[in-house]
Length: 197
Figure (tube, rainbow, N blue to C red):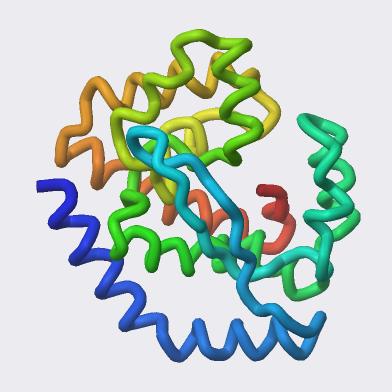
């Protein structure tokens, strides 16, 4: 049932926002050139690797420069790479909208644990033996950890929130999480609302 909601919602939002997405792509290209989209490898359900899409918010080739870093050092250096348009897109979460294409394809769900890079996933499985359990569902555009806690919480704490959602996955909780995500995005887009994430 949730998969049906995923398809319906992602299709509708992509259709309604298509003019805005075209303008966003043009703004990214004018601000910092091409490519307009960021494409990154992520671990999906049952360990399947897929390409996740976002509007590019960092300077070209930033991922090559950021590759060796993790945790707070990665966050600090990432902020220094954010473009002018990228900062606005992050504040409004518009950079995440291309992931709706991943939802349509079946790589992701609207709600679930956030997808993670293969290298980080392997390291976290070594550190937290039960981390693999998050792979029983599709990764999500949004999830408990993104709406409940701050970015620099421990991975173990984030996993606990992900597992809470996985254990429930009711229709009511699904729509509650979507509404909470929209509300949070609108608050952050207000002046003084911040732009991290």
